[in-house]
Image 1: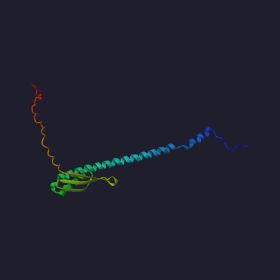
Image 2 (image 1 turned 90 degrees about the horizontal axis):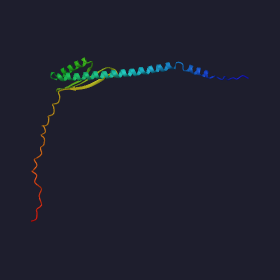
Image 3 (image 1 turned 180 degrees about the vertical axis):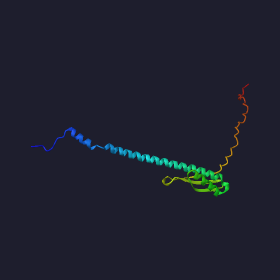
Image 4 (image 1 turned 90 degrees about the vertical axis):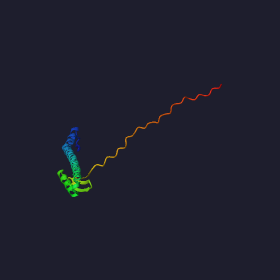
Length: 156
């Protein structure tokens, strides 16, 4: 009788296992490269969002200062000046309100999901608080002269 099952040696199984792993390093490499590309894209998007926010903040600050500087020409002229300054900074003026000498502006920068809107106010500084009168050092009242200790009376 012949045996129907063949007994394999130690090298046959190793060759088959080696053939089944063939190309797995390529799959792992492609996966790692894809993950790195996604991380790189997220970092670039966050960097762009920070730049847009800084551009909007700078434009808002300068636009508010320009409007506050020209408040005497009227609200419309001051807001026109603020709009020109904001456009020169790569932003757009969204809102401008002049109340007395104080300007309150909102400026937006960027497009789509990377839009940042910043509000800024400018005007004269508050008057400095009055300094209190200089403190005079407290002087102690003079001490009365020390009297000699009382002696008990002596008997004669």
